[in-house]
Each structure stands twice: as C-alpha cells, then as structure tokens.
Length: 367
Image (cartoon, rainbow, N blue to C red; front, top):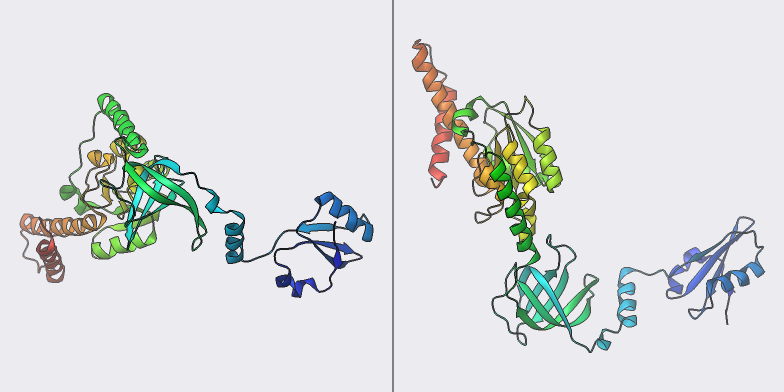
C-alpha cells in the first residue's frame, strides 16, 4: 500500500525525512512534494498514483535517499551483515605494503603488476603469527570481510597469513621487462655516456622533469641559484608513455641536458615506469644527456644502465651538478687566464665565488 502525503516547504525540512523516499512534482510552476513509505510499490505504480493527483503532462522527478557520509556508512553496516560471512575466505595476493600499527599489522594486497585495486588486510599480532612477511611477497590470507568505517573502505580481517614461495606479479613483470631489454641490447648499440665534467661548463639550458612541484623546489634549493645555466622545470605524470614523449620532445637544439627526478616513493610501484623497455629505449636513444635521480640509494631501475649520469638520489644529483659546474667554472677561468697571459685585473668576486662553492661542496660530499 502506498501512503502519499503532500508536504509544502520541503526545502527547509529535508533532514526530517532521512531514510524515506520522495517525489517532487510541478504544477503551474509550483512544487509539490510527496513522501513514500520505504516499503513502497514499484516506481511506475508510484508515478501513476501521483499523476492521479497532478495532471499527467506535469513534470515528476523521483529523488533518492538524502543523508550524509556517516549516515550512509551506518546504513551499509546495518544492511551488509558481515557477521554472516562465517565461511573463511582464502585470498591470494601480492604484498604492496606492510605497516606495523601497535598490536596490528596492516597489509595491502593486490593481484596486479602495478599494485592497483588494493585490499586492506588487518591482522592482530597477538593472534596471527607469520614469518618472512615483506613487500613484494606473495601471500595467502585467511579471514572474513569487514567495513573500515573511518575511511568507508572494505577491508579483510585476517586470522592466518601464509607466505608463499612464488613470484609476485610485480616480479614477473620485471623479469619480462628484463628479457625485452636484453633482446633490445643485442640488436642495438648502447650509448656512450657523455662526460658531464667536460661539457657542463658550456651548458645553457637543463630541462628538469619531476612528478610534483615540491620535488622541483627541493632540487633547485639544493643545486643553488649560482649555476651558469638555465633550469626549465616541468611537472609530468610519471608513466612510460609520458616519459618517452618528453624525452623525445626535449631532444631539441636549445636543450643541453634532460634531468628526470623522482623522490623516494611510498612503495615499490612508484618507480616501475623506469623499469619498462620503452623508457629504457628512449633514454638509450636520446641525443641529449639523460641525468637520473630516482628513489633511494638501493633503487636501481633498468634505465639507469644507459643513462649518462645517475647518482643514487635526486638530492645527490642536484648537489653533484652544482659541484661539477663550480669545478668547471674554476678550471675554465684558470685556463683562460694562463692562455691569454694578459696581466688584467682578475675578477676576484667571481673567482672567490667559484672557489668557495667548490670547496663547500667538496667538504660535504662523501666522495
């Protein structure tokens, strides 16, 4: 049975009708609002009933439940009774991330090589034992689903964790990339790295590619403003197709070198584009020097092998460029002064700046 009631001034009373269904109808430019029981009949029957009250040629719009986010999560918890999942589910996936939070271990599992579509798993360290658990491990977890209300996410409450002796999808992808790169190297010559020490002194422009503005700001702050070349920064989405296109686009006459930096990622998948064969080929075939500053010191993407220069991190790259330029400036100034042998008054300020910058960098660098 449909119970319909006309309610004027609906716009000021929406909060009173959470959990109910309603219909707004218009007649002669005036709005009419109707409340329907949650156990209402089919929509078409509702429309026919309302059309019986208002002319059929008038506009009738069905609206759905209106509630805030917390109310919605509460309703989901009430309607999806997770206690009914008495059967234990065994889920196999690759560990993307492991976090220790007090007496709980939080895992993020995925079945994709790029770590997408992750399932959040919660294990109590007091009741669940495991060994050998780490990122890039394939595991089988046993448990049941639950709702993580704080974020509105589906999660999995783990009662057992088993680390499997099998390759993850991520590792399989890297193996496949390595095979493709090996075939490419067999058919193509690897580029000879360009000596930055010999060329940086005549640079006019360095193109800097980074995933965000913060990385660019940190890099420029470390390198300093006194280098003798322009830095042209660009923020790009770090995916293989973008990297390849940008490397090719900036192989132009007014660019002397291309630097690509990426700060340490929050998991191993952040640097995956730099393992791909397409990026390797683009770096190898670039006519301009490619400088890389990627991840942590223990991250070694495949494209580092054919880059012209690749220190361990973006920070180290910035400091090294400042050092190399200061050293080249000092050597060029001294060389020019010896060759001309003209007793002109030296540019003491410039010479002192180059010497001080070079000495300062030498003092703090580990090499």
